[in-house]
Image (cartoon, rainbow, N blue to C red):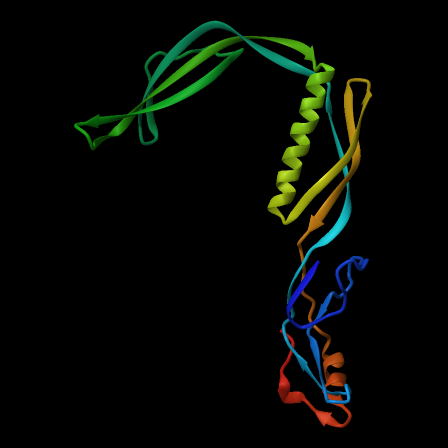
Length: 216
């Protein structure tokens, strides 16, 4: 689709285009009653253009992963912090195989008088680690989640996916995903009209249109 606000559209909705094609020109022809070009103005083209295209898609990840299972055992550590200085009240020398949760607790007198130091609580949650494999159902869910995140990243850049055609294959411990995405793209870039082209357009049928405008 194409909606032109300023400039001359060189394509219509449904036309096939390729990278580098000029879709809207900043050259605007002025015609007389006989439909003859008598002069040419140059403007900054402005349009909303949506391109429908097909994008390649590929992804891969390991079917094998490390699973962490909490044992229920936990330990706590309290730290007193003052700017860059801190005092660890119960230091833990060994915190391996533990998930750490840090909570900052400001010290307040009354409702809004904050003292210039704070207390940090660290919790260490013990876990056991094992090597697992994703099931077929988990692989399908993971593929869909990763594809959805990829689509969201594209959407932030003006690319909207309308359909996906991907296949899932396995090679050893690797899961391979490949296919194509049907996309609507609303990206665009501007290209300055060459000076020599503008100079040629400024003399049409002997008419000097130098003062009519320029390309920006």
